[in-house]
Image (tube, rainbow, N blue to C red; front, side, top):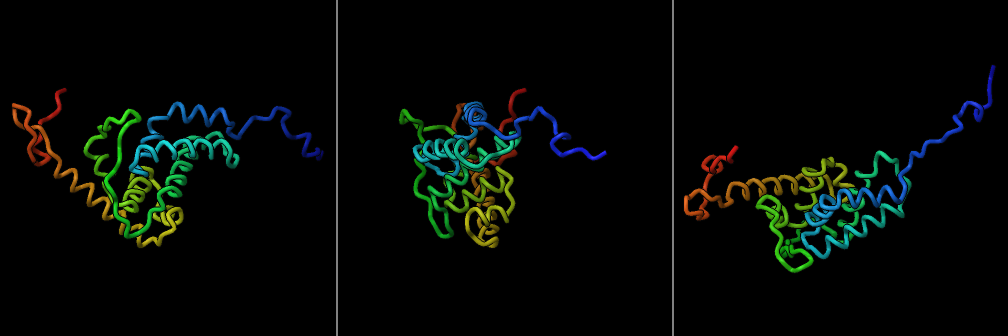
Length: 192
């Protein structure tokens, strides 16, 4: 009537933990998104590369992770490495972002992403982590070693700066292609 526990277990074991190859494949398949995450956090192309590589190394050599968590774990490792590299704290000011590709040419990230890069470090981290990555205020507070109040303030300031950047962006509204300040509702509608 009672069988030993070993007898009841299946003889075929399914690998439930991610392998090094799965992490490598995830970083290769999602290279652009993971690098962009690194770049948005560090606001510096060379530091973003270092962060990307460190995230891959930590994912491969770190704790065992369920297969289903490979992508989210990879993103988390990049975030943790960026925090270690940049040490964002309240009151820090942002220097001019150094965003270029490896050939030295400036990257065109669009006005919204450029606005994120221009945020103060703590605001930038909170914006990327809470708004773009969906982390809770509590989780941001723990990872960034700040009070929830600082995180809430940084998030509000980041959202305000992002909204102002969107409202103040220059848009082509003249037939000759001149850039002028225009309200969002005055922008030309995209062609279908």
